[in-house]
Image (cartoon, rainbow over all chains, first blue to last red; front, side):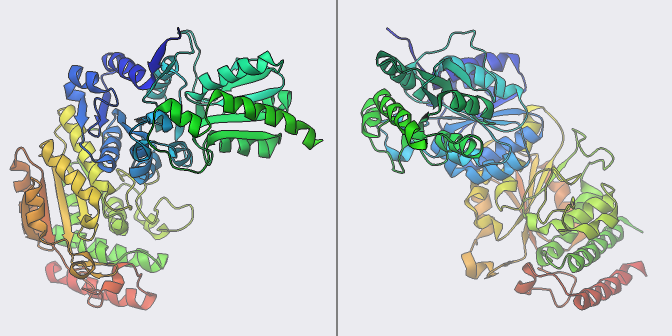
Length: 316
Length: 278
């Protein structure tokens, strides 16, 4: 059976290690120490942990102040509150001053499940991507999460890292060479390119297998850094396959699909199909039920791939 | 010249700079700059331990202008302290200038953080005070708020957190000039009772006449002796202070003086300064 790990659990684990190594690291949360998995850090390093209460705007400002005094700050809350409620503090207090604040936002996407739309961050990538200088990372699994957090701490300036609540398949081995700003080819293929971010990678890999059974060769590429975007790998893959699918657990407006469309539109237009939440709010339900209802499953990616391939002829 | 007259002279100079800068820029915020001039003179020329030669000196006291629109005053205080040449003040709000319409720490030496979006500066000040506690530093953090600004919810989130973490190294000053863009604060969105609110949020509160330099100095001194809680100085001020036709006139919140008005204003300010020179 495949191993399942929630990316937020991987974050909690790596944070303990980073707390040992980096005495300059300060962690903030907004009454979500348990849910965002920073509680163990809080217990081990109480002098470097501050619960800011249910006040995300102030938390982001306090993070900016700490960072301006030389601290590396991790600020955690749910994706919708980090990116929505506190957007302007992230924009101005943190990003305008280009400070070392790493926003680790858990509960990204519709896979939040039963809590429903109020707690499902489905616009966060879009909101964060538009802020000048902000780096945006959406790791695909627990292994990539740990590497992304480590890399984010080392790099200068603000970073937004989106994690999930639910347990999801572990895809990468420990030797996976993560770098901020790089996309990775997970499966080589020649008929269609499937670009994913976050936990949609595991869905895309299932779609790839199904396509293979029909003799269709899909290239699967993990775009875990949405900003800065690895435009080269996107253009090269589109060039070699001539058809593209994007898959994300986010609104189709402003996220990965938009980023890929922007890049291809300017450089190498090919048929493009976007899998994502289609301009709707989410609702309560089990993650897998929501994935079905909002058309985010491997089967939806499979269908989109066939559609994109079918459209290659239109172009001629 | 004794210390008090020295600071009065500085406040007067800051006010003159503000008028000159805004007249050249033809836009900006005179009212709330003039109301805070005595407070900033006391801070920059007496209270703050800072080093214009080394703006990033890690043990420096921090000053955050949370009411960022009063930045002409801040720029003047920085220039007159030696952070950059006073001639540069003439570039306020011009393209490619280091002196933006609201403070930008990436551009201007001595500006601690970007402010101007109201309510955000005090949160940053809380973060700086917290960093001082973590590192057991002796520096103090000062933050100047507008009285209209405290209508922002973030201010109260910050207020709660500062007392929760017992930040006695944090001193806020409220420029209580009673006016905001749309009119008297009591008519637009009444924040009263201001003192009781801050007290209820766990702060040490003090009231002063924000134009009385000996009183301001005394209050800063006393604030340092308070342990276990942050202090807020409610400074009762006059918007547009020092220029007769701007005093308590709401339109001068965000309207620059014309050249002619600037001339009259400068004459009044120069006349005023003769009082302590003689």
